[in-house]
Length: 117
Length: 114
Image (cartoon, helix red, strand yellow):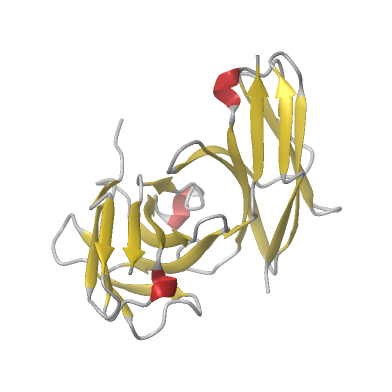
């Protein structure tokens, strides 16, 4: 069964460092997302991406965050200068085209746990 | 601001019991209500509901949406220990030509004991 894969599964970094989280969405999906879940809290929307550009972003997704689809398969989230409060599980997700009526059915990766010290 | 509220926050039941999980939502331009199961890491999709009163069923799990009262329930019959997980409810707004953006509830943590 096709799945969304994420790397790394866990990254520990020092405050102020840059991190890149990588994702390979399901190949025939057209929409890509990053969500995050701070320990014990809700899953929160960060950003959606379609047709090589950001479709929508939340207030959390400020200038320190960026996303990119550098090639035909990878989808990355970069955090430029990490802060302690960026510690969370970051989930990549993908979904089918909006016209399929199943765009809300997200397929999530296993997550990348980011720990900022 | 869109909001999703789930209850109860946690629940402990014995194997074989039936449970009902609740989800209420306030979403501008509502499109659909989704249920996910989160066991260890990734949420996995269970149901997507768009129409009121039509039950969706998958094995021992079923769900229904009430768009008038703005809530949904997820039922699990004959619970098994493998049903132990966090059940997440999420609301999807109707976006015109843009990707989906889900607002999640805090989840209901279900523990099924022997």
